[in-house]
Length: 356
Image (cartoon, rainbow, N blue to C red):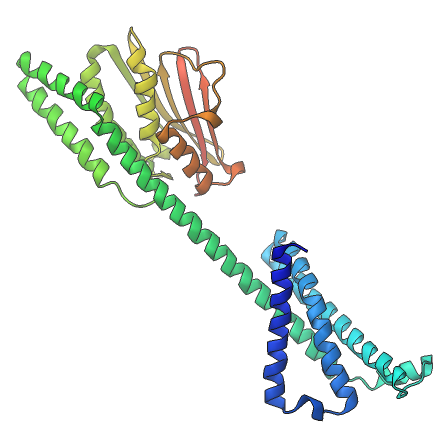
């Protein structure tokens, strides 16, 4: 018997012993009962101890059914267990009675003995079975609540990491250096209005990253707004060497998506693809509907993925954060994340349910 099973068995025994103590204090001295009733009480308690864990295992297996079907199954299960427990209890009392000479070991004596057992005893056992099943259900709800709390805490931590990573990417030397050079170039060419606008855009981007909402899910149009402020800076820096295509379906803009989902992917596209492209670079962001799924794509021109690339071995903080958050927010069969080579570079495709 493993440690968990031993703990479960010990907990069941202690709970029933506590019940016996409380019930005895309420009813009076257990040993003042008549012989048959005391035999019934003791043997009944022992049988409850023996069947509680198996009943719990059966209860767990009913979790795959719908709530209505499960409720019906549990009601019938409580009746069956109550009747079985009552029969086993009185059978034990009858056997004890035979050994003590109270009854004879005959079919006639057996039938006569069970004819005196009233409906009350069966109903009592059935009600106790239902109470046990209700307790199991409450324990299950508590376990689900704890699991949900843990997952929520993990998601909040990952969102905070995504926010910090987004800010770190924008504060890292090469980004600020490139932005500074772009502003300097605009000033040297006496494009003062553009330089002022560029500084304003950089300030807006940093401000938006700092005040990014704490919600796990935000409307897609909010993500698009943040991405546009980032792309406007890069567009000035790359001048005519960068072509940006935004192809967001208007019908998708109000769909809820994970907060800061697109920005790490766009930053990766610039870092690993567009910045290494010697000719004209192209970045395409799009959204579309595929039945009950929202499809988001980020495609860039530039170097292809190496032949041995595996998404499971990706080491980028931003990319790993996106993958982990998607797996926490959506079950494996309801979302997908794919990075693959395209004809001109690399393409990232995400599919998530629209009913999230």
